[in-house]
Length: 337
Image 1 (cartoon, helix red, strand yellow):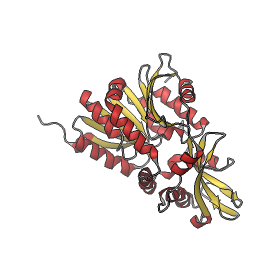
Image 2: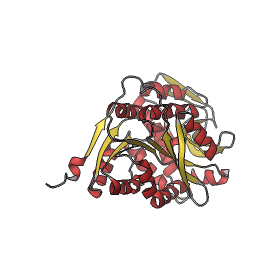
Image 3: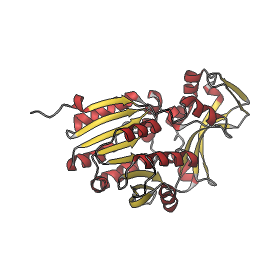
């Protein structure tokens, strides 16, 4: 009997929570009413935003993707052994280019079901088809939706041991409150003994970080990616942002160990967002935050994740200790599922 072909091993499912999560409009509205106003990361990842982020990962000054890929190339066989599970869910999977390195090691050990989670349906479909055409012992079920809804779906659809993966240092792209909420949901999803693998960019000099998160001369990927948030607000909620009224940049806040992606107003601006019932006032020089990137120290990361019922099993750092992969294991004492 012939093995199932790639087309039968790849599918994408829309997921929705049970009404427990806050509606998207309410999340965006609440973020815009904060000081300074900011936008949730997932809002920027439509098809245009996903493509622009892929361009960012190829910038000569953006070290994160290259360093993370090198760690996965070197350590994927060991990581696959330690995960010891037949199902792997990845938050914010994107193109899954780096994840393929780990999946290659996993399928050498066991048949594997990959559950990529993303808000970009097109990206999910293309990456699922490509992976299944390349890896014979892999099945892919893409979960199209926000993290909370996908984790909700995983709690309803149990099976072989599960590992949750969060690459790209994306864990740092949220406030502490938002990270705690996500960790709570991950802890509810994983059973005792199951694994959570997260990558994190480690704290370093402001000069290095600001070079990494701003466009080098001759490139516009970061600027275009940040301005796309305004296009999304215009398209989704009828906002009247004029993109040329804002200057995109990033700076490092040493007090919070956070790189802040910003859109600074060139002059006093008042923007109407009728779909959200919000009027946004931005004086000249004030900014809309369109990206957080927290930089961690190892002990602080272990404490933060450990507070939700995990213990650090092991970690892998690059030779310069700039970046790491951290493998946590779910403790035996588990909250109610």
